[in-house]
Image 1: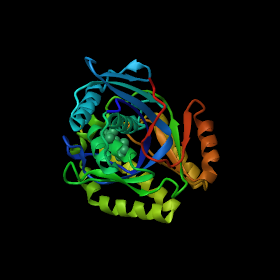
Image 2: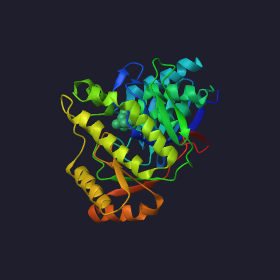
Image 3: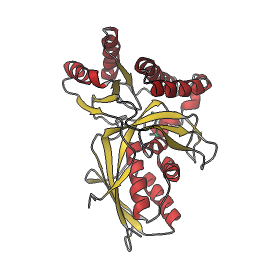
Image 4: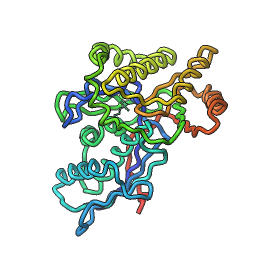
Length: 327
Ligand code: PMV
């Protein structure tokens, strides 16, 4: 057994989103989804299984984890079961961006935890099995395992639902300008919010055209057709939020600033700039553009929101081990 290992994992931004599960326990998504790993929103996690340790100890950004502790322990239990060990673990994680604000910290978090824990436990899993295991901790995290652009196959069992790379990270140089409008934590987590999906009258409609959406986005990425791609990802984000807003009770993750930025993006586009937004479960926004427009996009956002934190990203590879341990 290696006992100690460290992994670094990226956030992935979903272009066609995962919203709603067909199996809550197995975390099987209602539909396939398509994403891209990004290179500057990262989690680094070190895991060590220590003989004699009384309980799992989990530290995130220098403080003991309070919210979500049980979920991390349940995930460590899955790894212990696979490795046939029972040592408790010391886990230390560092996120380089605010958690719980709609930037998919659970994706990079559970991908890094899985890769670090599996290596620390001394077991070797292929990429498919790693993605399957990661999915059980956090659905969207399974897409942070393979490189570049990924497709999460919804599957009909625990063993058939995992993410695969559909294009490498250097296939298409597009940029994701992440705009952190505020670091205020969301009130309803994605896991809680997802349970409401069937209460929206639009959810079934959404599922009916999912296959067409998935086929189209793959075709646009393959052809590097930026405008068709941008229009589809923006309308997809709005559609997912339409389902959320029309759920009972309603889930409204946007703040007035989110809406202001969305309106500006639409105006900038009408003035000829190639930029599109996508938003997950929170107030913060991802702006997708081509490299030639990145500086302009950053400058325009700064002019409207001088206080915002802006993090520019390129397509990236999936979770990897590193020898730079955190303890
Ligand atoms: O994996 P979860 O439960 O954090 O859900 C994430 C869902 C979205 O971020 C809103 C969409 C997605 O596919 O990433």
